[in-house]
Length: 217
Image (cartoon, one colour):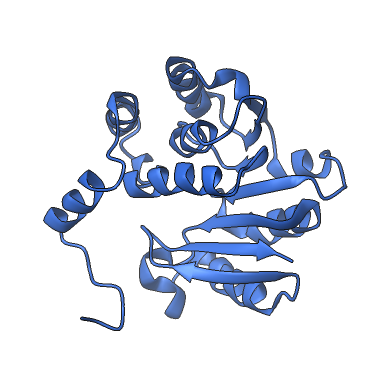
């Protein structure tokens, strides 16, 4: 037994993925195309176990209205959309037509394109255009790290009571304890902001590069 999460070797990670909703052909093809076409950006894609967790969480929370900030080639949005019921809606914000053109193809292949509203442009501006009432069930933040406080400030007031915000890359490869660049410093400061925010009940999990879940009160 252990009192902390165990490190994952490549073999153990493969075992974990294989025994927890393993990727289907669409997810495998999307991941492979991302690595092949965008090798310098491929690490921006969520881990396969994280994608499975997003689908599970979306279903568990009975999410009907969701937001994603930072879509890249679409794996996380595909995972969230697969957890939505018929009539559910996922609004995605991203600034890249190049990356999201790949996403659109895989959304269509998975049959979830009608559940996703992709908006190209600065996410901060797009979030401000959303209705101000507390209507969102779920939000996933995985974009430019210095923008996290802005996205957080726009999303929290729009979450329904009991809604959940998931925030990716909160460990920054372990560098949050000794920040080395602007992104590291931004995330370290953001993590302090979240734990001090009386509007939410947060928990930080060692999934992939660190995932914070915050339940809005």
